Picture 1: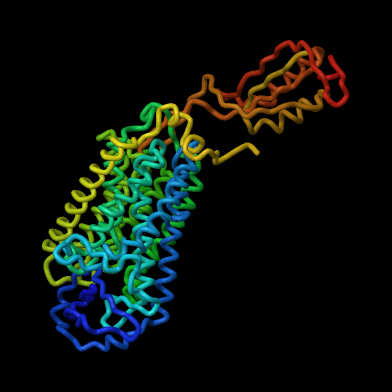
Picture 2 (picture 1 turned 45 degrees about the horizontal axis):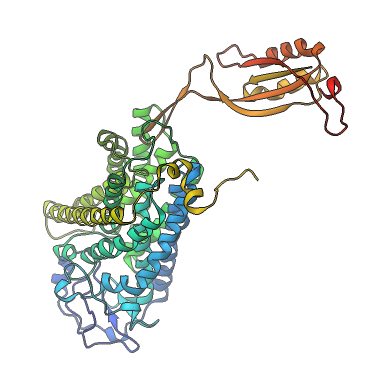
Amino acid sequence: MNSMMTSLNGSGTKDPSTRSVTGSTTAVGMGRGLALAAALLPSLALAEDAAVPDKGDTAWMMVSTLLVILMTVPGLALFYGGLVRTKNMLSVLTQVFSIFSLISILWVVYGYSLAFGDGGSFNWMIGDLSKLFLAGITPDSTAATFTDGVVIPELVFVAFQLTFGGITTALIVGGFAERIKFSALLVFSVLWFTLSYLPMAHMVWATGGLIFEDGGLDFAGGTVVHINAGVAALVGALVIGKRLGFGRDPMPPHNLPLTLVGASLLWVGWFGFNAGSNLEATGIAVLALLNTIVATAAAALAWMFAEWVLNKKPSMLGVVSGAIAGLVAVTPAAGLVGPMGAIVLGFIAGIACLWGVIGLKKSLGYDETLDVFGIHGIGGIVGAIGTGIFVDASLGGVGIDHSIATQVFIQTKGVLIAIAWSGVVSFVLFKLIDMTMGLRVKEEEEREGLDTVSHGERAYTNN
Amino acid sequence: MLLVCAIVRPFKLGDLQVAVAQLGVQGMTVIEVQGYGTEDGHDEHYRGQHLQVEFMPRVMVQIAVEASIAEPVMEAIANVSRTGKPGDGRIFVSRLDQAIRIRTGETGDAAA
């Protein structure tokens, strides 16, 4: 039976035999867990057969898709690239760009089906292969949104979610930049995407998914994307080991202006990431957009002022890093909290992530090169738990029908599952790859730089 | 024929050029260098990375001169490059065995 899942507004299971005129309707739960809505709307008779996508919603989702692509290429690529040394610039750019390309293909072949399909007895964890190669999906196929009767083309949902899988997998490269073997990284990316990203996406966002059914709230992917990638990067950094000369040789960023360009593209693109996760162009999407501005600003300022106190000078890298921390934290909360809650959440994330990259990193001594865990991991955890607090109506959020404490408990469970799942899967994969093909380049290759050694190119010449 | 090698602060380069031109110097070569002497370095920080940077950017100016104007050129460079703070630089003078002006093939003092 084709996968037919309840829409999140909880209007009961859609009749599986109902089909729209031109294709099947796939309803997808997005993890909002608004049980109140579910109680209010038992089995409404919906004009589902005639549901046609609104052009505005479709256009918005297409734009959101573009924006998230921009976040990865070149946003993330430049953000990371500017932070590494000159001799490794091209390696980071190549890794991000090629991983995004790789995941794009895998997503449409089997990723979408496994992430959002119905996995039968395994549906708590993963979907099925009923939509392998996007079987059965036509330009007229529709996917449900959070509003009953409102649909978008299923293909745009496929495309939009594709970009999430791509950026999540690409994020991880930051953990072990400047020493990873390119071939090993590609192999890892395929396996990790399959064994960690797809199950996490399913568990949090698909009906029947473990965390979704538990009531976990993750509007745009704080757990699925950021905690998932952050933990993987940390595990990778620990398995692969520190860079040669780490802690001794100076390794300052080689091009902070490009890091700023990357961070700016990330911020702008993130509006697609967060507001697009609403799946339609409504007031909630606008709320997500506004939250994505103010949480980010609050976090950037928090980091800036905190660093000013700690280091006597506020750095540009600090301001943009703070902004990214805010973006990460508001990701699970974007369409669920109010702007004031978003500001507080951003502020907390700015401080927490500053601690993550300065305090935690220093005290544990690991070389997680580009602070993927420090910013995405910690920011994702802060955001996930903070969502459970600030979603409450008394704090300006959209409201939940149980206490903050209950929701925070639910959120915490989701966080722990993500950490455990990603941690274990990543560890096993890194170890296996290390034992078979080796994760790390040779010492003299690392000294020379990955650009020439792995890619046969120089980023900057004197021509 | 002598080679005057002056390591000075980059922002002094323009004044230096004017000063030696007045003594008849018609050309020079400039190399961007780093160095330190008695001045203090400074701190840089990049997220958790704290660096103590000692090497400061400077420029090294090389001018080939006839022995007769070597002293005046050194003095002129020193006077115009001095700020009085640590890090003003150094001037080294060494003997040049030979020089050739490539365009004309002139050698010796005519090539300075």
